[in-house]
Length: 330
Image (cartoon, rainbow, N blue to C red; front, side):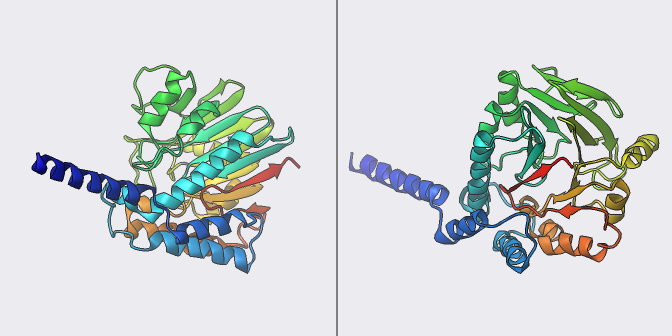
C-alpha cells in the first residue's frame, strides 16, 4: 500500500509540474503583452518600431534552430504570448461594431487574419498552435473560413471540422484535398468566382513560395464584401495561369493587400493597393533558421529599401499578432 501511495504522490507532483509549465505566465510575457495593448497600430514612430523589434527579439529567444519539438509548445513563452494575443483579438472581434463605411482587420498568427465589416466576418488561414485552442471561439462568430493551402500554420483540420459541424462555409482552391466531401466545403477553381453568403470570393492558383510546384497548390484569394476589395496572397508567388496573373495585376483597385513576406515590393507596386499589410511575420513555428526571414527588421527593411517604388501605397501597417486597424472607404 505504501508503494502505491508513493507512486500516486510522484504522479501528482508530475501532473502539477506539467500544469504549471502550461498555465504559468511569467511577468516578462505579461509586461510585453500589456505594452502591445497600449500601442497605436497607426503610428510608425521610434517607440512603435522599437516595440515591434522587441517582440521580434522576444520570440527569437531560445528558439530551436529547426522545427521545434512538439513539447516546446507546451511550456514556451512563444506559445504563451501568442495565446494572450489571439484571445484578446477574439474578444475584440466578438464585441466590436463596424460601421457601414468601414472594414476592420485583425492579424492573428502567421498569415491568419480576420476581416470584419458591417454584417460579415471572414477568417483566412486561422490555425491553432499545438496545445492551444485560442482560435476555437472564432467558429461561432465567422461567416466563412478561407484556406489558401495545407501547411500546418495555415490549415487546422480540427478547427475546420468543428466549423463545418456548425454549418459554417469553408472555402478552398479546387484540387486541395482538405476535408473531403464534408458539410459546407466549397471548392473554387482557379480563376473562378463564387458568391458565398453575400461575399464574392475569387481564387487564383499559385506555387508555394516560388518553388514552381503546382501539384501541391496554393491560392491567392480576392475577397469582395460591402464594396471593399481585398487580396490575400497566401504563400503563393508565381501563378500557374499567366493570363490570370495578368488579369490580377491589371486590376489596381485593391483597398487592402495582405501580402506574404516573399512578395517583392515590385509586385506590390504593380498591384497598387491603397493599404499594404505585410503578413507571415514573426514565424517562429519553423525554428530559428526560417524565423530570421520573417522578422520585422528583415521585412520592413525590404519595403523601406524600395519605398520610392511603392510610394503610391497610402499606408503600410505592420501588425503584431492580435492587433487590428480600421480602414474607411475613401
